[in-house]
Length: 150
Image (cartoon, rainbow, N blue to C red; front, side):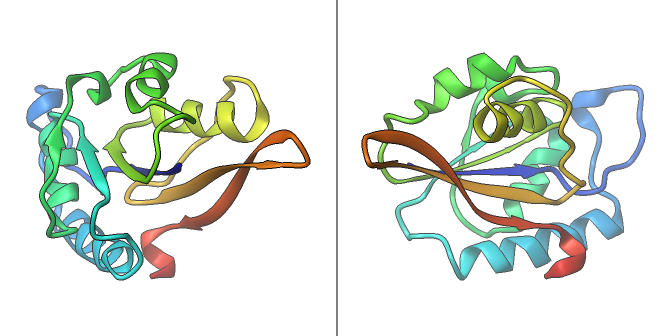
């Protein structure tokens, strides 16, 4: 399974967290990283997105169809998210567009074997895959990208 964790791009401040929208900078970030991803993702990639406005707008920068999933909403539990995406049993490529600290905690669990603080920059992503080598399950970091590097 390939699992891409993409944090929403730069967003406006606001009292209603679910309705916060991307800033002009955030819209540029979403399109830039979305273009980078689109050139590399398989056509059958499944895309799961938080219902929050800023995550929806970030995913729209990719220009592909996506599913809105409640378990990815702000404040989501990292273990619940991992269960929902079916890591590591699910086959194929799965892109999750969501929020800190959840995405960072998922990345830390997979990379370091424990939940610990790990920050993804706004608009940034990590691309992980799993494999079995010599009988051992391994997590492999395929890519880490920020909007500034695109």
